[in-house]
Image 1: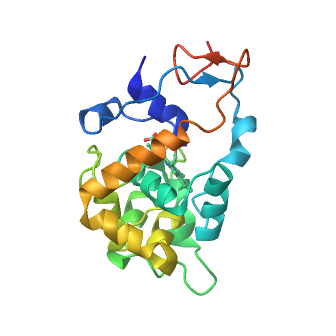
Image 2: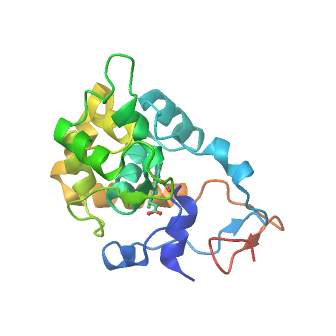
Length: 210
Ligand code: HEM
């Protein structure tokens, strides 16, 4: 059973690098029954958007039995991986009629993003989401967000909204607290929507029906 594959199935990213395993171990609950059909149309209304504010994020995660703290820990998965430029371009080009750049972003960071993702960039271009340790599953994501270097509005809002700031500060300053919270939350996430009885199937490859 590809344990890392199980992580990618539950998360909304398109791929999770296999080297995730070098840094983060936890006991994946095996034998999950999944649906036999997997289409974009089925999932797109159930995934959070990068422009979501805290209320929208909390609402979507709580529908699946996940708390605000779970949601913040899970967002830490953005410590690895890539994002296409169009997923965050609104924050650096057309945030609001008054501020083209999201004023909560570190201005140097916003300009770096503009350089990597110019207007009218090839839509296939994707960049490392976070630069300091892009291939290491650590708490660098939270350190970046504290410094105004949250790539998506949904990342940055976790620090700018007073209701979630303390948890971001905790995870930024305490790697162990983040790792334990992440493992607890992703285990909960893995229990969402499990099929029972004869419904669905246990996948041989987590990323697609058998
Ligand atoms: C909190 C709400 C979340 C939002 C708004 C969000 C949004 C996004 C977006 C827009 C991308 C870029 C995809 C692309 O351009 O191809 C992405 C990538 C990614 N997300 Fe999330 N995500 C969220 C939560 C999560 C969770 C819960 C996980 C896993 C536990 C996760 C893991 C990832 C990973 C690993 C990638 C990188 C994919 C790759 O490198 O191909 N995200 N996310």
